[in-house]
Structure formats: structure tokens, C-alpha cells
Image (cartoon, rainbow, N blue to C red; front, side, top):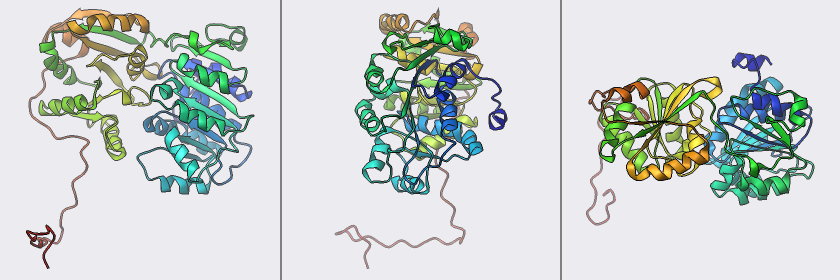
Length: 436
């Protein structure tokens, strides 16, 4: 409790109040709540409490949390680090982008809760560096996204390795047919909790009787995507295709932390470069970046060095940065769940935020259908660059026009302090090797 208070957490969010008692009681739980509503602590805190009464042997964790991306896995580790330390429990990660040998060595020293992506965890098991025979509790976070990324087979292989009496927890912002296989195969008489951020916590008796907050045994396929709550204002900005670049640039030049979503890695790199050429501190995040690049990018965005993050859907789930006041769909998403997860990067933990989608004439019909499926109410405006309405909605303004360097670029190599220039050997024409 002291660790939670130090982090400013004094009362439970609805999904936490609904799910924690059932997890502590040893029940299998299926949870759905809007992004940013506290799902990580909803399954993480009771998992830690359930593991406090024993010690983990080397290479044999007693708790496992599976996440679809390394960013989400590392975020979960950060969220649970202080509570775990307070309980004397050890956390470890198993994610790509970092040396597997280092993770194997960590497991050898003993880990109580292992947080990882399915592929890297499978690699560690294949090398004999990890075993799941002692696992008492497993949580699968963003299970629908696991299926979307093609990880479902890897997840089932891992879950098949668990003891038959292990407790299973599935949490996500959306629950649909994609995870129904996992539910039927692995969860025993699960309690289902579906909580939107705007819904207050219901009494336990109401949850068990099948209220809107939680209905025992409900099918996840029947759940609509979680609403993003009244704390988010959704706007559709109808623009001409010829105006799109200017509109995006003016919005990105606003004050405040801004997240811009685009469809492709190439488009993200191109947009970030153009924004920096216009004088806007923009960094880029997508699946083609190495882990050290991603770390520098998120650090620059989080500390305000770069007020703008341009990202693909790799950032739609699992990236938590405080005070993102505006999310912009530069390219409209293709799926209503992607819209909800992108939108969930703002208005987190009770804050307010704005979500703007830029739509051209040729995108309008498809986007209208997506909005209906997402269940989102939007305010529609037709805007042009430099208009008062654009400024009023987003804080858009003209950029400085003075190019700036990439805020997430690696630090320069240390200077030669000797003051001497190192001689270079001449190259042979035949072999392109230094001649001797």
C-alpha cells in the first residue's frame, strides 16, 4: 500500500475494483476495459500477492505475463516494479531486441514473475533457460492483439506447458471471437468483467448477479469494443487531399504533447523528417526500429525533448506516456479496435484528451462505417489550413520553418582528446584491404 501511495495511487479504478477480489480468490478471470483504465494493476497486483508465500527456483518462474509487444511488456514491468519490490518479489523480462543471454542469466538467478513476448519466451524454453512447470498464475494481456499479430499458436503452445491447476487471466481493451479459442480451451468457469472508464465500480454482489460491470461466464464474442469514455472528445476533420500536408504540419506545431498515427513505416519516417524540416521536434516509432532506437525515441517524447511522436500501430497498444493531450489519425485506421486503441493513448487514468481524424473525400465512406462499428460519437468539421476553427479544435499554428535535428538521434561519438589525427593506411586497388 505504501508503494502504491508513493506512485499516487490511492483508490482503485473500476476494472481493478471488479477483478482483484476474484483473482485473489483464485478464479479464472476474463477482463475487458478501455485502454488506460488500469488493466495492468488489475491483474498484476493480485498476481504478486498470490505469489508472496513461496520462493521461485532458478529458471522456474511462478508467474508469467504474456504481452504482444516488447513495449507493452516493458511497460508492465515498470508498472509492477515498485509493488514487487515492496513484497520482496523478483521480476524479469523475456523480449526481443536485447541479448537473449542476458535474459537467460537473469532467469538463472531466479525470477518470480516473468513478463515477455511469446516468441522470446519460447526461445528461452527451447534453450533450457526457462521452464513453466511451477507457474501458478498466468496473465495474457491484449489477447485479441496477439491473435491479430499471428501469435495465437505460440500462445497456445506456451499455455499447454503450464500445470493443469494454474490460474488463467485474460485481459484486453477488446474481447471478441479472436480470443474465444483461448477462453474455451484454458479458462475454467471464468468470471467476466466488462468495465468502461466512465462506469463506477459496482458492489461485488451486483457483479456476481450479472450486472453491466461484470457477468460471470459471459461470452467475450458478445462484447462490443470498449468505449473510450466521455473524457475524450472525438473530431472528424474533413479535408482536401491537397491540404493534408499543411494541416498536419500546423497541428504538429501546437503546444503540448501530440501523437500522430500513420499507416506505414515509410510514411512515419517521411512525415517525421518533414516535420523536423519545418522546425517541429518530431520523433518516429515503428516496428522497423531497433530497441535502442525505440528507447531513445520514447525517452525524448516522454521528457518533452520531442513534443511530437509519429507512429504506426505498434504504438497503439502498450505505450503509456503521460499528458498526451492530442491524438491525430493522420491515416484513418482500418479496424475499429485499432481506432479505440489509438484513441486510448490520450485521456489516461482519468485525464481528458482530444482525438482528431483527418479524412479526405475518398476515405469518407469507409471511415463512416468504421465509426459506426466502433460506437464512437464524433463532431464533424470541414477545415482548411490556417483557419480559426482548426486552431480552436487542435491548437494548430504556423511552425517556425527552421529545420532542427532529430531529438532521438544517438549521441555523438566521444571526441579525440589527444588532439592527434590517427593516420589511415592506404588501400590496395586490387583487394580493397589495407596495404602492408
